[in-house]
Length: 196
Picture 1 (cartoon, rainbow, N blue to C red):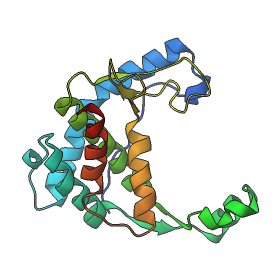
Picture 2: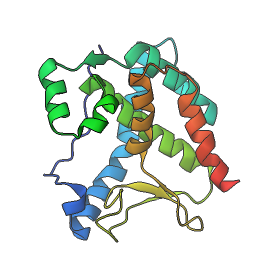
Picture 3: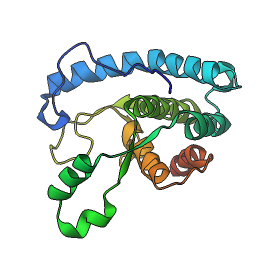
Picture 4: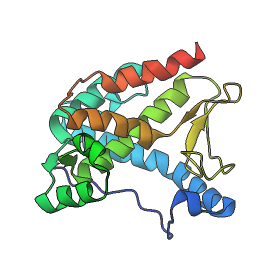
């Protein structure tokens, strides 16, 4: 198991929907400044625990394949939920949802690596697609990514890419046993198509 430090802001963080625009700006500035640090940490972990080199992670779309393969095969630690955790989830949801409830989860350390993979994916998109930039929206508390850092495009107004959300969708597939090493690369190509 990889001992991987998590990303923690040096200030109290509240639910994103509860943040004021000023609080969201403070978080956003901190987050964007952390991206190179987190990616450097990811590269070092990749080099230390794989047969690869941190130079393999060169922000090319193809670099996403060995990165996800490393995560899926060497890092992702799936743990079963305890009986108490499952019972709690079941008691908090309607019966018709019970069949969708996962009986397992990724370890906290694995989730930390996955979050940084999301940042690497976002930066790979940003470096390969002109005009993508980091931003946040505070316009509506009902907006799914309200106050969260997202990638945006100046002319494709509907495009909002939130890295954690996108990578966690892949993690749900992983928990279902999908160990496709090209899944991260395919996520990149889906997003790239919006700008071709």
